[in-house]
Image: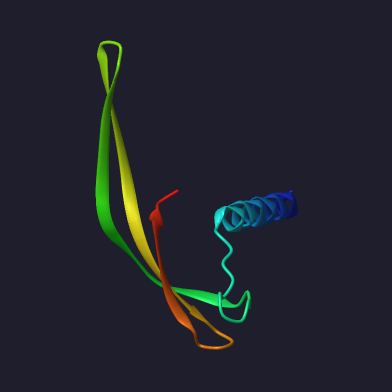
Length: 86
């Protein structure tokens, strides 16, 4: 019975890790197209607030603009991407 609990825990952990890795963005180096890229840092660049009205209600839409730095492990090329957070 103890083995069943251990096996179930291992399966759940593996499923969780696969789910988390599936959500991560895959980035290739723009210079050499290598998939071996490391994210160096991610900073908040700005906050944009768009407000609109829907009937009598007020809709607030906040977008976080993030600046992310990458470095290629193959050719050592570094670059920065500025984009809204997903």
